Length: 310
Ligand SMILES: Cc1cc2nc3c(=O)[nH]c(=O)nc-3n(C[C@H](O)[C@H](O)[C@H](O)COP(=O)(O)O)c2cc1C
Ligand SMILES: Nc1ncnc2c1ncn2[C@@H]1O[C@H](COP(=O)(O)OP(=O)(O)O)[C@@H](O)[C@H]1O
Image (cartoon, rainbow, N blue to C red; front, side, top):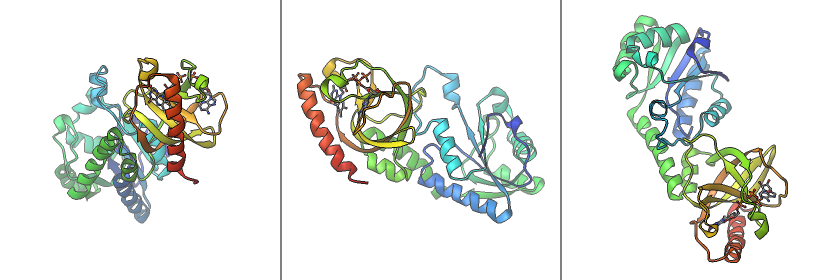
């Protein structure tokens, strides 16, 4: 898959089969649209192009606003789209020039002249161009003029796609991890770097790798304990994760930590990927480190049972 951060890097294709959207989560509904896109491309000997927008305008206009939360970082999304077999991913940053184009200019200059669109797969409610004036009707009107087909994603499908991104976010924030994973069709995951903590973990027999995520917009599930799988390098390990501000040791920051089972390597400064499989319990404040240690021993039994043998 080729990735373009600027539309000017794109070399016009002879038969581009294009779709446009945020695709946050790259969930079951998105995967159906992508399968349709690939089929259209295969049937006509074309190449698939996915146009997405990043950063979100609000992230640029209000960088202090941390309320926008996404299921995937842009890199995670790109990796999944590549795995699904998209040929070209165009990541358009929001800019004044871009948002000042009229719908007609956008269709002519970008979709037709820059990309070489022969088929566009688009939701009935997709808006584009200055003040969001353009929509499906403009595409249907200009399709015959510029020689491209318009394939409309039905209202019901769009509804389901929107609903499932929202439902995935809600489920992750409510502890319904299995439900989120069902909507996603893969286990929700985070990617981050392991940093040094207070080194209390090892003193109670449960060292925990502290994970820092650079992307402030990445959605983090609720506080609590989770059954997880961790990928470091090429190895996959089971483990138990903790998200919270460690009330027992009077922590102040919200940490993401994981105790990896049957593992004893130093992995500071390494990138790890952690998949969430189940929610085990809420964060709690214990009267002593011994009481916390005893609870973690029980958590491990729960996590081992939840993750099973596979
Ligand atoms: C499975 C698990 C469950 C945990 N549960 C709690 C908890 O309920 N309350 C709490 O304050 N800390 C909890 N912790 C976090 C510990 O307080 C933390 O791992 C310890 O302070 C070590 O911190 P360090 O990595 O900075 O050394 C838990 C950690 C693990 C691995
Ligand atoms: N089983 C394990 N699970 C997690 N981290 C481990 C494990 N074994 C060794 N480590 C290493 O120890 C570190 C965690 O130890 P800990 O005492 O909790 O220190 P810190 O407070 O710096 O996280 C991890 O970052 C990792 O480098």
